[in-house]
Structure formats: C-alpha cells, structure tokens
Image (cartoon, rainbow, N blue to C red; front, side, top):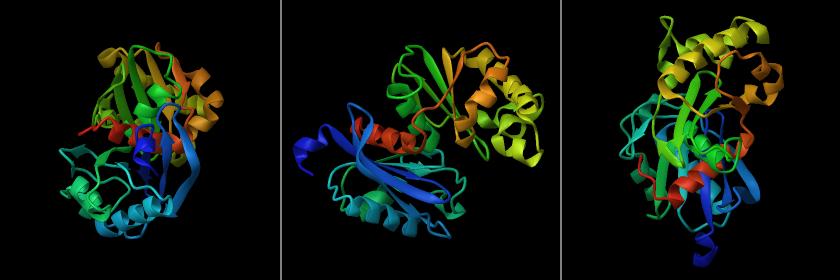
Length: 255
C-alpha cells in the first residue's frame, strides 16, 4: 500500500488467547479495508512464535506501513509486565523491539487489548457521542478496563482487580463467574451493579461501555443493572482491538 494511503490507514493486530486477528483500518471511519485476517494463536503462545504469526498476517495483507498490536497484558515503556491468556514467558519481554524485529524495523505500537478496544469504542463505537469520562469494561474470564477522557487514554488500568466487598471485582462479576456458578442474569446483574457502583464513586464516568462476549446479550442483563451511570453495549465486537491498535500506532502512542 502506498505511503499516501498510510496517512488515512493503519494496520491493527489483536492478539488473544485463541486467535490472532488483523486488518487494515480506515482511520477516518474505523472500518476495515478488506477482510479481517485470523490465524490460531500458537500453543504454547511464546513470544517468538506469536511474533512470527503476526508477521504472517501483516505480510498476507500486503501491508508495509506502521503496525499497532494488542496484548492481553500490562505494557509499560514497550515491556510486557503481565500475561493473561498468553504464555508467562512474555513477562519482561520488550514487545516493541520483538515485533519491530520481525516486521523489518517498521514503527510498532504495543498496548493492552482492553485499552485498544476502549479507544475504538470511544471514537467510533458505543461512546462516540460522549465528551466526558468513558469507562470500558470487558466482561470475560476476568474484567478488562480502559479509561478515556476526550480521546486520551489512561493506559493500563486494572480495575478488575479492585476489591469490592473484600472480593476482587472480576471474581465477583466477570462473565466466567456467571457461568461457573450457573447464575441467572438477574443474579449476576446484582453483582455487576455492586461493582459498577464502586467504580462510579471513584471515577464518575459519563458512560460505561460493556464489552466482551456477554455484551452481545446486553438486552438480557443491562436493563437489570441498578447503578447510576448509563451502561451501553459495545458495538465494534471483533474489530475493536484491531481498530484501537491501528489508532494507537497512528498516534505514536507509547504506553
């Protein structure tokens, strides 16, 4: 793709525990140009083999510009500090150097996956009409979080680990807890509401965006929530991480 096209497009890659997805993103619309490319996450998901898989995705798209990449990790100064759903050997790896090395030295940004989804939902998705503080929460095995104010990300928030009533928020209200304990939506919504009320006291968000797979069933549980802040379902789903990663490299974000 030409240098001129790089000004309006960037490439995003979203690394998850089961799949690695990538695509060219039109930065003015948040839409993918062409198909989303997906390859299985290698097992074990060690750094070098994951990086080589990312390179295959980028190469198969014919992309030669900057690449934004998400990891299910805290990333500070380009270095991986935690590893959720990927191999523990990632901890301490300088991810920017690793990915840049397999991508011929081009510019790379690496950021947390929930942070990337938050950027995308804030700009193009469920929170695009909100000017105040936006809190994105992804409900899955745990609870991922992103905090954004007027397009600016506060990176690496880990609100899922905040204690609520002596229990970590994600051990109380992740969707995995609903499945594990066979809770009804009514029962689970009580726990989610309790967690959101604590977040509200600290952050005073204008809107809370609910992501993760359970957000596809939002109509069954969001109306049951009793917290004060409006909660809206994420709208970008499978493309949020890709879009947010592309936005991050466009903006030269360095978490």
